[in-house]
Image (cartoon, rainbow, N blue to C red; front, side, top):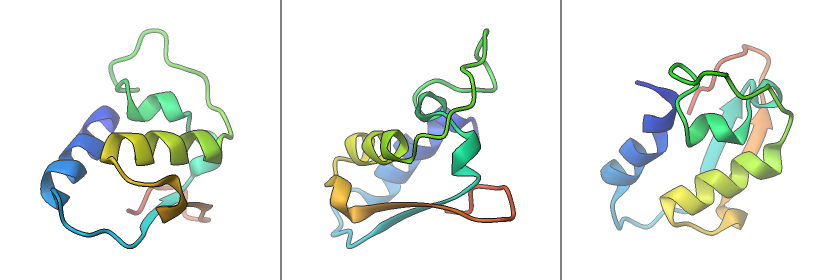
Length: 83
């Protein structure tokens, strides 16, 4: 799945279900919020890496139609987005 497909796919699967918390965890310090809107895999030029957890939170909340306070963004040592 391309990076810009993650949130729309999640939104389709969750639909109107109640969501208590959204956890974004992984190598968030090396991601750019733009990666979740435009596929990094197809971008030319690729947007630079950027440590912007608040930007990631805003994109996730906005795309999923949820409140930002329900989205936590945290760095984990394994270097991959896990959720």
